[in-house]
Amino acid sequence: MPTNTPESDSASDRGRGNDADRRRFPILHELIRQNLLALVSLFIALFGLGYNTWRNETTEHHRNVRQSAFVALDALGEVQQLADTRFFGSEHSEANRIAIWGRVTLIRDIATLVSVDSAGRADALFAVWSEKEAAFDNGDAEAERAVAAAIREARAQVLADLQRLR
Image (tube, rainbow, N blue to C red):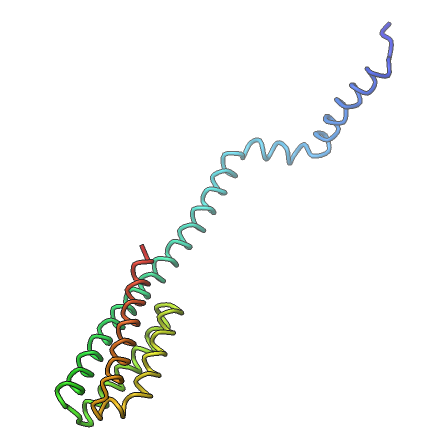
């Protein structure tokens, strides 16, 4: 006849506890065992869907930034050309003034789609042009340097933002 020692009782209780747990949830345990491959496949599919969605959103954001940056660079080039024509070529027509204001405003608006830093540089360009427009028309070299520097800084920031998209 086997003797029950305290050590053998606790070992047998532990074994019975696992059996009792298995008896409590036999259907759930069996379902998990039978469908483990399907559950793993479901997890992988959900992970893949989440990653694909994130990647598509990132790609779309980069595409928007790129397109906005190219528009901003184009407008910055036009502002530089129009300003040079106005300052060095003595083209002080209202059409030229309106064209510069239109381009400076476009840059300020579109730069918000590129980055916060580009938007700040575009705001600075808008402020410089607002302040220096009259002095610019009077041939003030300091006004021309300030406008040219603001254009250069905005262009450099937009280019830096484009390079960060890699």
